[in-house]
Amino acid sequence: MATRIVRTQTVSEIAPQDNVILDRPVDKVYVSSDPVVSSDPDVVATATPNDSKTYTAFKTYQVVYFLFGLIELLLILRFVLKLFGANSASGFVSFIYSLSDLFVAPFFGIFRPLVTTGSVVEWSTVVAMIVYAILAYIIAKVIEVLTDTKGT
View 1 (tube, rainbow, N blue to C red):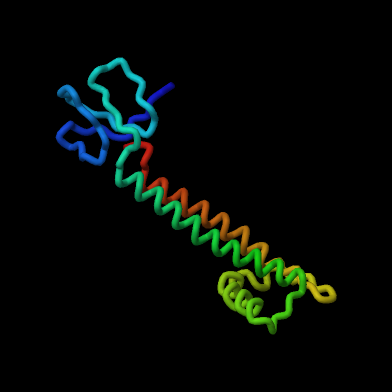
View 2 (cartoon, rainbow, N blue to C red):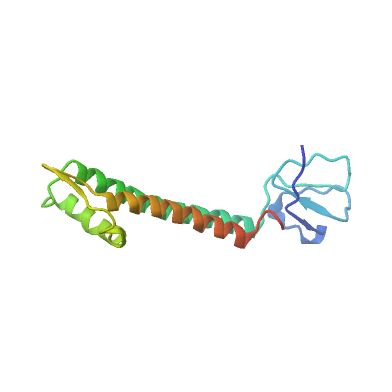
């Protein structure tokens, strides 16, 4: 199994939260997110790397996917409510429609909605869900490129 080195640092740069116990002096400490298997006595690794860049990238991923997940949930609710012909005079339905209008508005007019008695297939909502999913993926990839946690 190959070991991926996340970063190299001297012993004096090791913080107490890195959970490294040194019983002998070493020149370099290799901090890796994978288990280090080495016959070199100077290789010491932490169980979890405390790399602030990796942590920041991970938290940013979480925020991006959480926000876009909320948008997707809102759009799915809108699509289902329109599909089943929910009463727009209802407070909850009105709230969902008015909140989701902001996210669907750029896509109105691309396709005409399919209207039957009591239900509407709103294709603009489907297009919006696809576009926002792709946008979330692109933003996550940009974060990955900008933080470049693999190459440090």
